[in-house]
Amino acid sequence: MIKTHNVEKFFESGAGKTYVLRRVDMDVRDGEFVSIMGPSGSGKSTLLSVLGMLDSSWTGEYYLDENAVHKLKPKDRVALHKKYIGFVFQSYHLLDNLTVQENLDIPLSYRDIKPKERAPIVADVLDRFQIVGKKDLYPSQLSGGQQQLVAIARAVIANPKLLLADEPTGNLHSNQGREIMELFKRLNDEGTTIIQVTHSEQNAAYGHRVIKLEDGWIANEEK
Image (cartoon, rainbow, N blue to C red; front, top):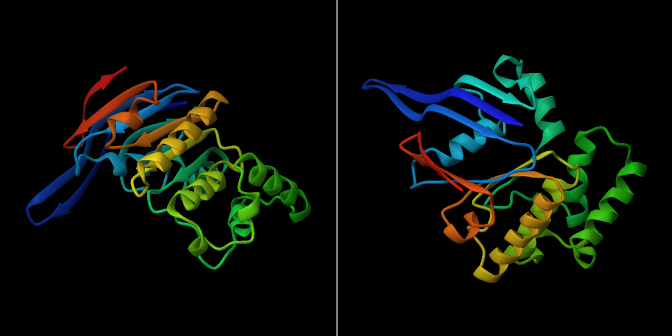
């Protein structure tokens, strides 16, 4: 599903170039669950942003399901992101002025799905994630674990082929974090390809293999 070749990102200053990513070559097969690990500042979140097309200032080659992302115009990258990718952040990123139900509706509206078609999809996801009772609540009325559950539901509601997660349990208690990781495992078992950035060896163990970054370089891989 994913292939990168010689992907690099750097910042220029008076002292020259400061590299965040260096010659990143990686392959991720359809249906894999991959964890990216490494110390703070190693480039993990930057790499995830590149893969999720949230960052366009990089060089190299990136293929997503045989689409040459590095050759696409910005509007075409946006369209590809909407078609393929769900993103889960550490800090939830829910819209505070919208209810749970309305937050879940947003990604569907971006895909030009008619309101009458969106309603049953939202209802199904509310039931699947066991948050029907929370549908009329606002994010501020939910616990951290509940907010992250809604954030994941929002990320997968449009059935993305690829789910990217940046420290998805970083703000959660251990029990809540375990529940989220079990949910990821179920989603992966159902066919969703997942790439997560994590500092947790325990969370990484849910995946098929680990890619370790150091100073922007891929240091090694572990299965």
